Image (cartoon, rainbow, N blue to C red; front, side, top):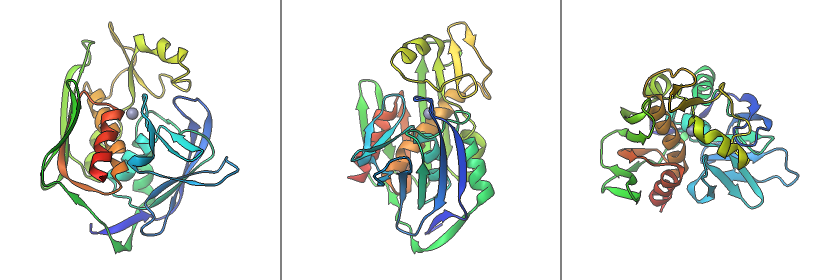
Amino acid sequence: MLQQQTLAQAVTFEGPGLHYGKSCHLTLAPAPQGYGKQFCRLDQSEQGFIPALAEYGHQTLLSTELRSGSQSVRTVEHLLAALYAFGVDNCRIELDGPEVPILDGSSKPYAEALLKTGLVTQDQLRKTIKIKTPLTVSEEDRFVAVFPDNVFRITYGIDFPVPEIGVQWFSLIVTPETFTEEISPARTFTLLEQIEVLREKGLIQGGSLDCALVCSKAGWVNTPLWPDEPVRHKILDLLGDLSLIGFPVVGHFVAYKAGHDLHRRMAQKLRE
Ligand SMILES: [Zn+2]
């Protein structure tokens, strides 16, 4: 698809955010060509837009937060992953709270809504970044790298100190179809031992077994959809953060034990 795309019609979601636990409404609305993806906080007296681009990334502690002036929006990655995988170039994202609803902890509700609503093609051509030379961002043994390829491909590896997760690798060519089937249902996951620590820090106030996969040293607390659901979710998070490049990329991303910080640094590097 060489031309830009937007949603055929608006679609609305409602629910609490993962970290603040505050319920809000989120509307994805069609937007004109060249608009990109921008968040608009309807609950703020001063109306402003927060572009979904890497330079507006504010902090990345357990989720990606964007900020522009006094306006911010948190936990944008699962929503942005679906918009990016579906090739949505232009979208106005309205919400009346500080954080995108976590829903079931995955991107599945967003993917289903995009499939149902459908996309329309616009006149302007889309710009695409084609990787010509490898690039890497790293921190000790953790990294995100990108290599030349003829398709948009992601390979991800994780290593968690619990037997049920351990070392997992997953690789796929990203298309709306592969994203919907293999990645979008993968939920946020956490280790049981971390939950109290995070709660005491004021994080994951909206978390529950309805929106996260929880693993303890003794095994899974709730049942995964696939044994490798955690690494699939990491691909989902990476896609959401790569969407902050603002353009589709043709190249092969390889990540190992990375997180939102390295994901966003790669997005920033590619924007530069
Ligand atoms: Zn996530």
